[in-house]
Image 1 (cartoon, rainbow over the protein chains, first blue to last red):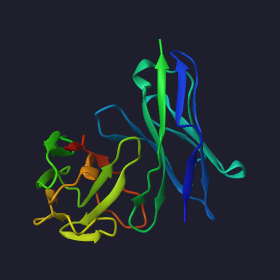
Image 2 (image 1 turned 180 degrees about the vertical axis):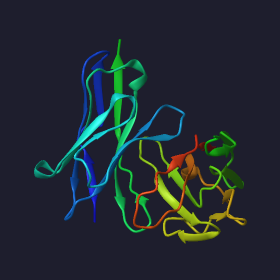
Image 3 (image 1 turned 45 degrees about the vertical axis):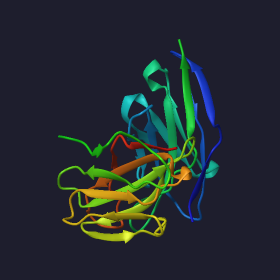
Image 4 (image 1 turned 90 degrees about the vertical axis):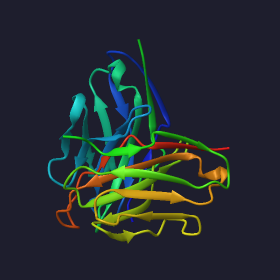
Length: 113
Length: 117
């Protein structure tokens, strides 16, 4: 079965500095992985997804993630943080069949002025 | 295009009372999901529908929770009676059904925040 570990429960950055949210996965085969974002009092939104095509995946709002099999990682990055990026981020594996998403605890990103 | 609609957005009830949440998915989306999100946690799937059929309800506490999607469109999730531990955000999501081996992006509603006193 697939599982992921988000290595940081909280990340704090200054506006304009890079963002790195870490996610390691554990799977015996190449997984399908997704990053979702949840802003306060709003629904979850898909940022990007990896489904065994290109290893560097570009998402919305300037975010991207690189699937590294050698490191079993799928870290989320953004070159320059914006205040509107403050939210909770979830790295989520997909289970086939049925497209079941299994959410973990997430990483809360705080952006300081 | 309208997104997933949920109502009410907030609900406060006393324990042992019944409560119901309503969800209208994106038009044309065959698959509908109900999740529960406890404070500080990620969402947990309660039930998944494909059209009218509940294809995965293994995580639904069936002693007090029930759900229906009679015409394969909107859905209602009910709790009767509610307990203190049911306080959470209840999220609805929908996705188009292509095939069960491809990923169909799930679109989430804003959720209903339930407080049980």
